[in-house]
Length: 515
Image (cartoon, rainbow, N blue to C red; front, side, top):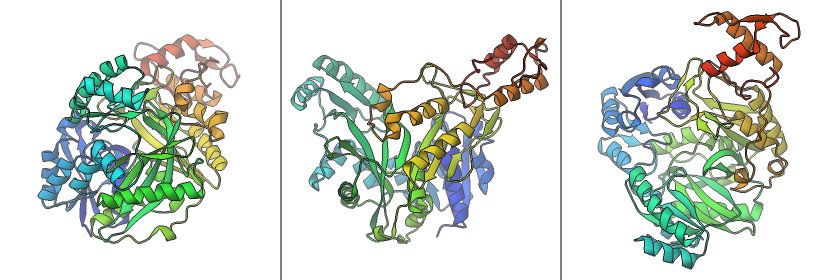
């Protein structure tokens, strides 16, 4: 077992890994950029080291600096979390070359599965169906010919893509020519690999993924599926476990396909095999993510496992402590991603200071976040603020708990997508499980913004009265306070001006229209 593990990441996932290390009695080492000095993972870890400025290329993507810190502090292993260097085979190789253990798959497995074309070829070789499509596209003329053969519409994809990047939908030959050129440029800039390929665009489809874990003793175990069809611009927003679309037989078929792919790739540690599921119950291999997924909590809650701890144990050479026959799923879990984006302003990123944050609690609620009062939301990193997961004995029970959790949650100072998530959860089609990957495209943000609760308006007004204004105290007029008691309060116009200037927004929406 390791004595000390360095966590090469930030935010809620870094804190999650630090906690897993503490559960295992392993000393943890946090690294941080200059803007993350006060982050919870920095304060919670056993030790923390500055690795560079805010720019990720000089900090969280700086392989040499991270390895130097690991050597200097005596770490024996490095956990990459997700994002940043998590699926970088060169980083994994550098960690191993430095005499340290990379908590993840081998560099070779990462290369094989990280290249979408190689992964497709691997799946086909073992009889797992793949989406009809092409091998590597050499020229724009080749792209148009392949698209004509496959049939429109088609998806143009980067072979080294990930996270929804490098994907474009083309409906005609003219669009293929224009979008293929754009995909090549983006793939080169984002991934250092200009290779693209083409797949038929299957629609409507569901996005189903299977969690797997494999040790170094020949054990490959699946931990069930996750439903990830609620996406916006190919980015997942809501995930759940299990999926309403799978029955016993289909679940057995798709999970067996996932473990076959992991075995064929000689895969070790945690990973996720992703599939597309059509209305006529055909499934097709999409890709395999060679890392921990953002949505892993829904699997942990329904199976009772700790994937982060298990990943560390597997990397240390320990055999898995369970097999598929011992994993009995229980109930239903749903996860919502809370991001700093304004759903009422075309989902533009929201930056600024979190003046106040309150996380939900209560039965069946799990929150993973790095939020704290005074936290600076910067444009340097991903906009994910927190993940809220709700569990219930049934799907309806989990949905009701999630609705309660989101209405309890407050993030004051920056806009969040909480109002939008509540709208999605309340749609009848979603509650009935009738959705696919284009669901959010068909159902946009409702024009009417949710009203803030009266108590919340009173609290904000009280805050403004206490803090005052650097340019003078807001005009006070006798007006009906939210409680209707006729106390002196700032005039509505002064409230709105102050709210706009300081960007004091709540998780329930913008300034309440009732004022």
